[in-house]
Length: 200
Image 1 (spheres, rainbow, N blue to C red):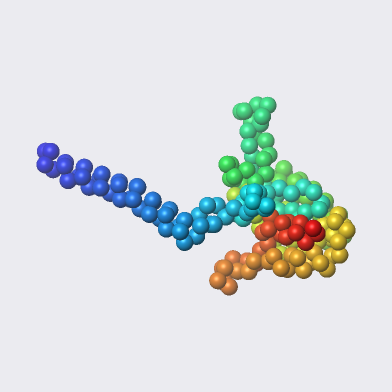
Image 2 (cartoon, rainbow, N blue to C red; image 1 turned 90 degrees about the vertical axis):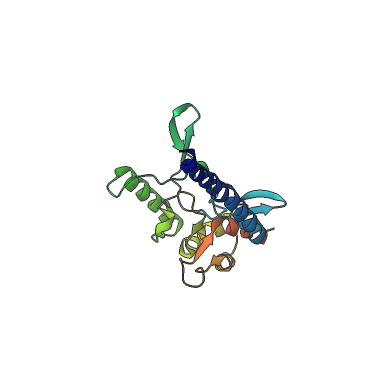
């Protein structure tokens, strides 16, 4: 019986070492050598300090900055660990809200966001991505239309000409991957960093 079982055990151990250890280590090493920035999380630095990742959004509340999409991620309530509280762009808890089209809470939240954004945009209807969360809750991008919609507010808060801000947005638009995949987009963190550099 041992004669029949031994090849199975040897094969199991061999494949475990190859596919569970050697292959992942080799791929990690190759990725680190070929794509060092991407393999370490696409970190963004300012003055030698990591301030975020190009892959994960951040919450900006000040009128002086462009805002990203709403985020439905949550975190533990510090007062009651059995409950959760909103924690925008919480990478440890990537998720959507699970609120569907018949949810009154979702409809009320969207209606409130639309009205607030209409006030900022001189009555114009905001782009849909400024009032809807992504499935992961971590999306760092908005559409060029969503960025341009915010120009008036940011220009007023920073006392800057709107034309200069529109140009800054246009300079930070990322095109489709390979010219055909995805949609044009703007990374909100990169745009806000460019905005800070422009007004130094």
